[in-house]
Length: 253
Image (cartoon, rainbow, N blue to C red; front, side, top):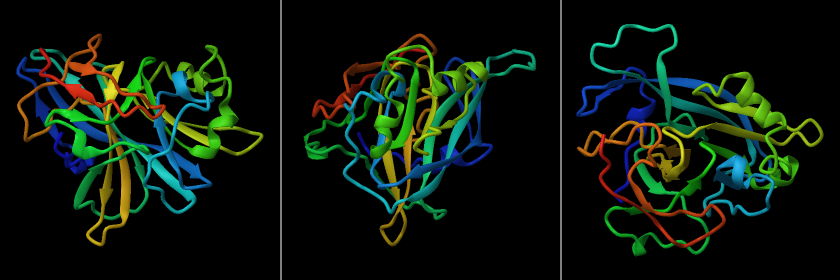
């Protein structure tokens, strides 16, 4: 799968139109800061993998510190739909900002053992989503949220429930350790999603971006699927370190 320039997703006012006539307008919603005490970044479905000691960090690490998390949120409007006080919104992408510098190149975020040269034209490495959510966290934070994937309770669950599963980032801090997790609804829901690393002109990491395939790439004509569909993905992705890529196929909308 060719690298996608994710910059336009986080440019407020960017628009797109599906073949059905549904239009989308993107805006950026900030979610707070994520603490990376080791600088080793993990991305996964928190209600499936967080606290299970089953997720490996990406091979590219950053300096320890606190980094901003935000989301590109799409407001979707069907043809002839009147304005609403509760517009239809979806998280199109989530971003962990390492440097406030433009990204001039993009590459897949990889786990140990993953080889991008083994991928076909329409394949990518990504993490699987089975609970309609994604997240970023430091590798050292996994044990601080040990009960997250085992019950419909806990601080992260409460954050989603209290907001009525709003399309925005939810940053939760464990009061005992100070570890944090930044979680968000995953676009249309379950599926498999890639994370991209943006780099500056000098080669420094500027951000990690998970693309939930809500906003079609301007360079492509294929549309994402609507809610209730996995997005047209065939194959699977395993946040626990599988080398199997997730393949994409055209989705009907």
